[in-house]
Length: 347
Ligand code: 2P0
Image (cartoon, rainbow, N blue to C red; front, side):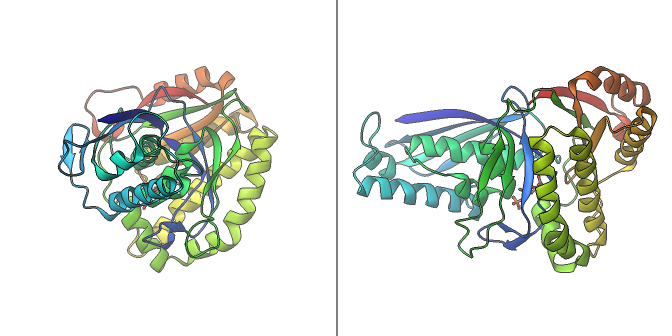
């Protein structure tokens, strides 16, 4: 038997991925860009093991057995084994530990836990698939870019393989070989940058990202326009802003892109609404705060759910947390009004 355990953090997109041009290969209609959080918090932890004693591939997610029938798991396992087979044919991967020949003829057991609510719009699939693919790659001694494999598990997962700010280039090829993640800057580039996650609700979302983006691609003209004309420009602008640590530009684009994602969701037919009243109050509060300060001090961004992620600089954390706690005093068991600053993540 051989086993590997890894952790992978969630990532928070500032240029959002929404829509696929190929559902099976998970190829997006636009490039996207995110920051990967630090390893300590909001992460998936996965152990993968191979053994001659195992009679079939099996997986447990947060302690409960899950079926591996889902084509995404099948695609990931098939691709990992295909790459490992290629290495074995080349006579590699037999150096130490379990030989590749054994690993390839044995079944795999996967055990994964998240330390945050699954499917509450907190990028759980990104951390989960990133961690799974990274662990399997270590177990099967695969080398080279694995973001193409992670992408086939869940699109945003490819961005969690690297730290710092990471882009997922949409690519042009039909086979997806150029639709890969690339690190823009490392986690040490902008040490003053912080993310606050405000948990508005930890309930499962009413429509998952994959289903939601499928309907948006079919019905939203705004989404098509955004992918073709707006995202390419914004990607360049925000990359330059990040490289120059230009918080004003970075924050403005971040908020505009989040708003455009949710506008595209509303433009979808039938419409998809992920934001709730508390989310909207947070947006309003952020703009009021920035107006009061005379410049942008904090930016919000929302994924496929009502929870807010705030990007800000370290010097603003105490003030913003005080403001949030004042406007949304933590209340036990009070549905949507139950909001708290979950934690300060260090990039
Ligand atoms: C993002 N989201 O860029 C955007 C913003 C949600 C809103 O990536 O179908 O779970 O597995 O490729 O990766 C969520 O999409 O979807 C997502 P699949 P995924 O972070």
